[in-house]
Image 1 (cartoon, each protein chain N blue to C red):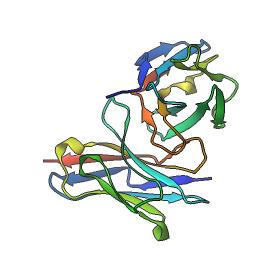
Image 2: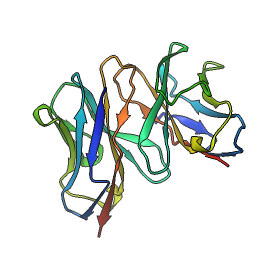
Image 3: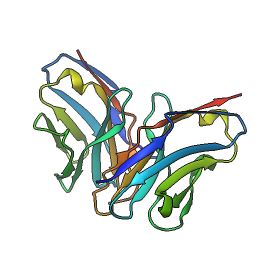
Length: 113
Length: 114
């Protein structure tokens, strides 16, 4: 069964460092999303991406965050200068169309120290 | 704006008992509704979805949910719990033409006792 693959599974970084989280979508999917889940809190929407541009973003997704699909396969989330409060599980999700179900990856646990 | 409230952060049932996980939503337009399950150290897996067709939706692993517009609810049920159902369950809502943005509830941890 096709699946969304995220790497790394766990990333530890020092405050102020840049991190890039990677996602390989299911091959025929065109819609891409990032969500995060701070420990003990809700899963929160960060950004949606379609046709090589951001289609919607939340207030969490500020200038420190960026997304791109650099090579037509990987979908990445970059955090330019990490803060302690960026520590969370980050989920990539992909889908075939608007309002179809999103398929989630297993997540990257980001720990900022 | 839309929102989701899951009543009960923890639910505990005995194996073989009815599972009922509650979800209420708030939305300015008819929403699409989803239930996801998260097993330990895994991602979110779709259990079922409501997208304005039949109000009673059947999903995987014997789960079903009923969309009740008058009650703004989308409760998840399973007639007989199995030990393997122990996980965290998330209700989520999206709006038509929202590019698939999901708004999640806070999750309900289901524990199943032998």
